Image (tube, rainbow, N blue to C red; front, side, top):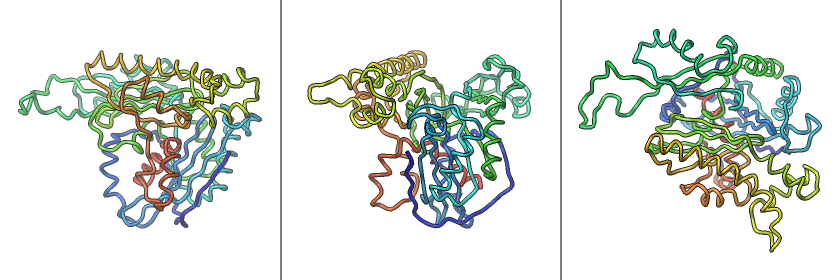
Length: 395
């Protein structure tokens, strides 16, 4: 399944290759988006490598704006002799082949790229430490990280960021407080070195340039959040898992993974209806959780999977609210799985919160007549757009 779209001719720009894992304050990034478009026109691409699809977005900066040039989506199933929509675990060689294909079919014209690291290949944790200098933190964080990372510390790449608090320097009465004995929150992200090596191999095969890698949840936050000050949950439903991120002031405070996703729904339909996975995928996308003229077999079969997912989401949501005495009043839906017909209504019923679809294309400029199409496709492209926005800022 591949669709592409093209708007204008970009300008090619190449830079020295740089490989790193990038993580920083998403709200800080958002505030900088208004003033970083000051140099000549330049294009960048975000590549979201999922387990069942690859999505790409190419943006350029011009006249102080991020402009959509082209985007595309490619199913990975056929590269593993599987049906469209099925999960894969492709080798670096096959992934490179798929990326090369979508770059060609989508008319991508720049090598400046950012790639997503799947949440399943990373570990993100919030820890508390004494208030120390950056140099001291550089020394102590690898030691502290051993308590949270279930593999030898030498086998992972680590990035970290000190989380600021809005009231860090003010007490309840607005007066400065003594911070000598205060602790700080540090967000740690770890990615297994084998994953980084595999992705670097892919990059070399496709000959992309000036690369950085970013864990997908941070890209999603960048592309879907405004200046939200309240507590928000991001619900990202992929093929194999449903990822949950609880975000406050644009900062990930907690993250969880539910071991079911949209492929579980397809598999259940295939078994229940006695049809192929390919046919079950079509039925799922067409009917979803909607009523079917008195025959509710499809809805009931799908509900077995979605009810479990929502029960786990509710458990995470309620546990966080009880622990921190805060209310999560908004849930942002991203990922291809949330486009299941009837999913948003089910989420409203089960989660008792404001439910909105992520709208990452609102961060870029595109022709007005495409607004409806882009809004509908938005949840699937949240990661790719977040990557491209960060890459434009980076270059």
